[in-house]
Structures are given as C-alpha cells and as structure tokens.
Image (tube, rainbow, N blue to C red; front, side, top):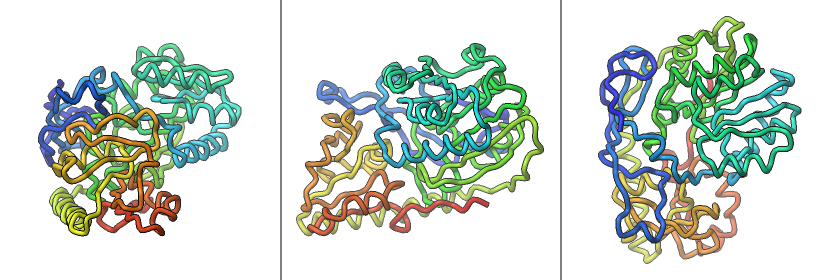
Length: 393
C-alpha cells in the first residue's frame, strides 16, 4: 500500500479532511468459498491538497489487488450505453474522424459506438476479461490489456485524433504519468475528452458512497484544469452531466486558449453534517419498515452498496439481501456486510428496497411502477429523495 505524503498532481502538502476508517474493497464481491475468511480491509482517508485543491486518498491500494477480479461492465447499464452513444456522436461533431483511443475501455461499449460513427478505435484496459469481450464486439478495432501509462502510449505516439478517458483518470495512482501518456499519444492538434466524478456534486449530495479505494482522486473544474495545464492542455469546454452521481466532462487541446475557471472552496464541515442527516433519514426508514414487519433489501449492488453497508454497519440482521440485474454479481456477497446478491426476480412487493444505484433513481422508479403499485417500497437514500446534480456554470 502506498501512503501519500504529498499531492499526486502538484506535489503540494496534504491535509486530511474525512475518514471512513477501514473498509473492504468496494468491488471485491465475495464467493461462497470466501465467506469463512472474507478478505482484508484498508484505511480509507480522504485528503485535500492545500495548493491545487485536488482531493485524493491518503492510502492507495495496489491496482493489482483491486482489479484482479473486476466485475463492473459498462454495457450492463442501459443508461450508460445510451450516454456513450451520445458521447460518440458529440465527438464525431467536434473531431470528424480518425483514430480514437479509449483509456479504460472496459467491455468496449464506447469503442463500439465510436466505430459506428466511423472512427478507427483502440482501447486500453487492465482487465483481461473485459478486453476479450470488447474485441468480440468490434469490427475493426482492438484492445490492449494493460494499465495506461506513458510507455503504453508509445505504441500510438502522435497518431491519435482523440483520446477519451471516462471515469478512469480518478482511478490512476500516477496522474502525471497518465497525462504524459495522453500527450504522447495525441496528434499536436488532437482532442482530449475526460470525464471524472464531479467533486462538487459529491459534496452537495454528501455522497460518501462514491468514495472508495478504486477512486483515488476526486476532481472539480479547478483541480482538473490545473492538472491539464501542467501538461500543456487548455480547456476548450466543460459541462456537468447527469451520470455517476454527477460527472464533470472536459474537452481539452493544446491549440486553444483556456476557459476561465472559478475556484471553489470545499466545505467539509457541511459535508459531514449532511452525511449524518442522510444516515438518520435512511435508518428511520429502515426502522419503520422493520416495525411494520417489512423485510429490507438493497436495490442494486454497485460499489455504493458496499460503502453504505460497511460505513453504517448494516448486515443481514437489517438488510436481508441485494438484488442486481448483472449476472456476474448474482450469487456473490457484498464484502464486509456479507449481504447476498440475488437476481432481480427475487424482489417481491413485500420488500422495502433501498435504491443503491441512486444515480439512476428516476429511471428505476419508472421501470418499477408495477412493483410500487403492488405495495413495494423504493427508498432513495439521498438528502432530497432523489439525486442532485450541480449546475454546469
């Protein structure tokens, strides 16, 4: 485990701002054979750079440990698939055509959409299984099974018209090497499209479940702009999109004048206060369900479920099970809490279901209208009863 003594972006001093204690790896779901010895927990301490304001984890678990059995598949989510199709179309409008490289290409959902738009594509991803799935869905492109770095980028040196990194920059344990690779792969007039978990939305929502070991860094427009500038990139445009509980998307190049960015102070005291208000609300709803003899479950078993269950110390004495539509997760258990994950068809109207994929709450409410009409309860465990996305500007 790496212990950060200085900022991974600018090497400035760090100050600790929030701790979740020791937590299991959020995506390391357990098999039946694992239950007797359910794995390690690691300290999860959030720190902030006092110079560039980048928020990052103090303790960094080795990538080989976190991604040895990775079970997140982009294509398993209908909203994510639609979002990537829209992104591919936006890139087509701005770039036209050419070679597109995706860092963290997962199962090839975006690469496939880029091929449809006429791009030659190549993906880079550390998960072997995901690379194999991606190769099968591509007609011309391919994927490289590797962690992105400047040395890996050498294979594309100066040839890429666009490099795309969707919710992967925040997973990197070496931001400057990551960005050096982007710079090396792109043509001089190439475009870098980067999406990151938007820190401001996370703070507004007190979204502590989005803080887990795989998410090493947490950006707002200021800290991301500072990292880009350090590698010669200027911000052409940016927006906040309604994805992953608030996603910051930036378009950057080396051939433009950067947009002005406003500095935002991070209010950690309010974050902690709002987090406690969230806990009180959710626990009161759980208590109400139990007092009315209604079993409680999680609707969905994303990484957020691991974080909420372990930080709030919820186990099977409180939460009976978690339903999930992803076959690769079914038959497994949430680490730490040991809550079993079952197919969606085991959810009956008798349940009070806490929606863990609350970034898709509106879509889930629409999809589960029959469940609710039959007496089932869906609870969105957020401050306002539904996700809040901070306005763009």
